[in-house]
Length: 113
Image 1: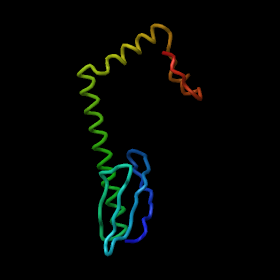
Image 2: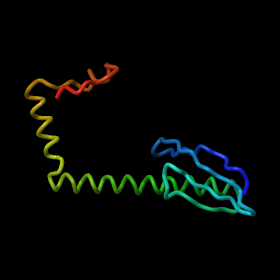
Image 3: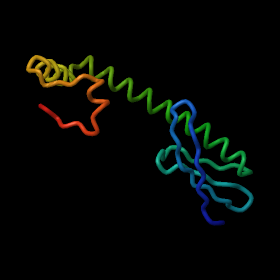
Image 4: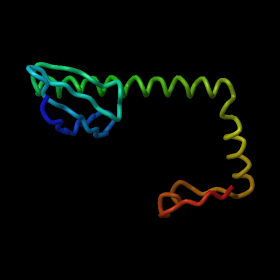
């Protein structure tokens, strides 16, 4: 096996860049994205490998997003987030809140709860 090379792969939809580890293994190329363990593949050329990694990365990101959304919906329906809404309402009534504009203009945010 040859030495591992690192290559940045950018997902245009999620606007995120990930580092792929690729290497030649005999006649084929192996690749993986350590930050997304499900993304691993083998291809006959480096170009095909990079294209396949890009496609598999996007599919994995979509799957993660769908799983997150499903879990969020289940949590909302089950009332597991109600305490957060109640806390927000309480803080609002007590004047312990900041506008989004104010938060964007401060360099750090200190929890006022």
